[in-house]
Length: 207
Ligand code: AMP
Image (cartoon, rainbow, N blue to C red; front, side):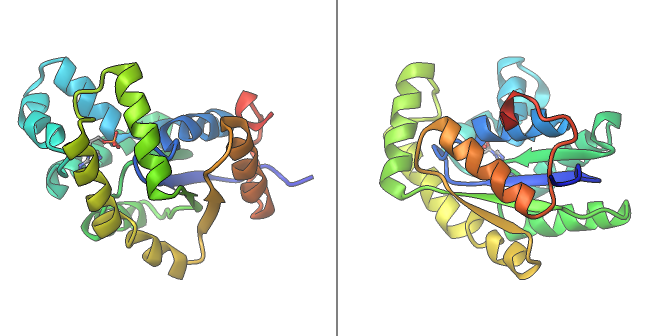
């Protein structure tokens, strides 16, 4: 039996439609840390009509990236909250090399670093099929065909390369993201446990 992880600072990376949002919530719940999704924060600001929401709305609707400075500041503020002191699960940030640098600087300033980067590996066609399905089910206005193509292109060009940085640090846990939700969840917890990262109080996510 693996001892519970001392800290749980995770990042989950995968193309849109890889299931990273859903899997991220399960991992965060099991480890008792907050899930911090920049996409969710931006969307909440847009629906709440805040100043931030107004600034980012057109960028998000086009599937482009919100400027690094704004995004990194938002994440720093969020991670400075008390509930993220012992750990967190980042979903959707960092998304390019600039943001990787911003995050490293911030964590280094606190004497922290990421424990694992969970890479959800899903082929392009599978991602597109899942996003299109979700657009129908959830009526997401940022999920039109052009926008989906733009977001996947940005993922491949800017986000996938950040994995090289983390691979060099030896912290990437690559997971085959094709399968049922439960199958993929099980693979994630198994792979984390192999690295000595087991939840102290496994919740339903680790079942
Ligand atoms: P997501 O839900 O993670 O797919 O994010 C939805 C949208 O929010 C993205 O297509 C971007 O427009 C924006 N966004 C989310 N996270 C970031 C980030 N780290 N940097 C820049 N833009 C982001």
